[in-house]
Image 1 (cartoon, rainbow, N blue to C red):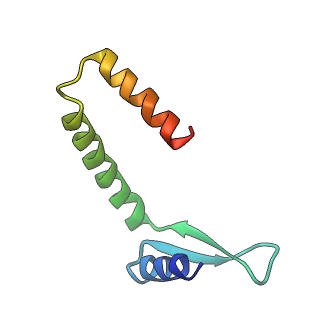
Image 2: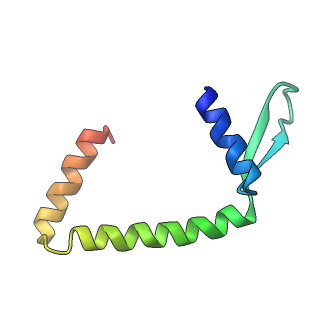
Image 3: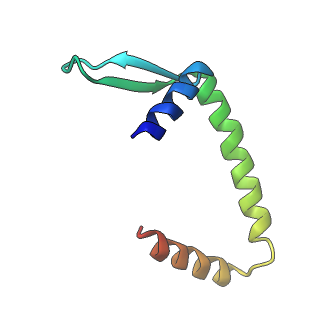
Amino acid sequence: MIAISRAIDHLESENLLERRAHPTSRRTHTIYPTDAARALSQTLFGSVEKVNAELVAGLTGKQRKDLRDILEQVLGA
């Protein structure tokens, strides 16, 4: 839990997350991404998609499907 709190503190200090009081609990906060985080996420997801495409570029369609199926099993999806 401490690592999560530190990560949230860091992201908040970078203006990527915002803590708001929970509507029904005085001891709880709800965490929301900021506009800066939303903009950054678009850039990051674009980069991830590009890297993923490069990683599987040499595979056939069947090999890509097989790889996806294996990864889903490993990840428990």
